[in-house]
Image 1 (spheres, rainbow, N blue to C red):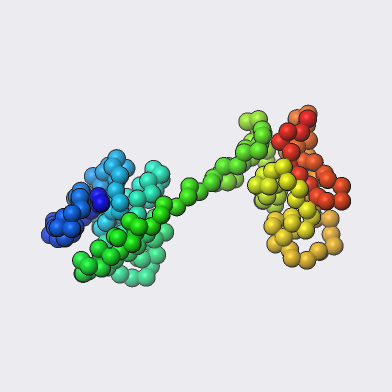
Image 2: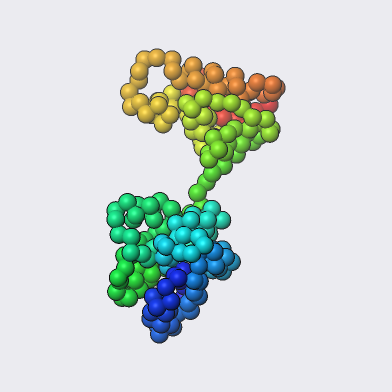
Length: 226
């Protein structure tokens, strides 16, 4: 396997490279955060070991940049910073594991092997498309034929559920549970009111109504509506 070591301490880097090399692995070494970033985004690695304190770009910023570039290479932070808060910061930055110096090579090896065996995560879906409607789940934005549709949070969540179940009937009970987290009937017209508001905003300026009412059943988002 091929690994990347981003470590400015030459002795530590040589120690890791030597151990992995003896086992037949290929190891690339970067002595600064900037070089590590270039290598991590330009080559394919089974995993990378990243020091927290690096010249140029620190380890946290390096891993954040790697993740922002869409690179999913597993990353282990290797550092003297051992506080719980430091570990949390590392994991939230996109790290997969955290090992504190001084460390035993066998433990590092075991962690690298575990990460290398881990199947890649499925790509996170950030956009939903149903006919001429597009929803950006990150920017929280809805477009219909390129025109922005301004929605309130519950209206957005309601449309998201309808889009995820496009072409299928969503009953009142399903909407109460999935959109409002109600596991009982509040005996109000909250669903009907929000569907009406969503329908008005989504269809404003367009000829077709994309939300179809199925009498006695519920609602369905029909991208083929004419």
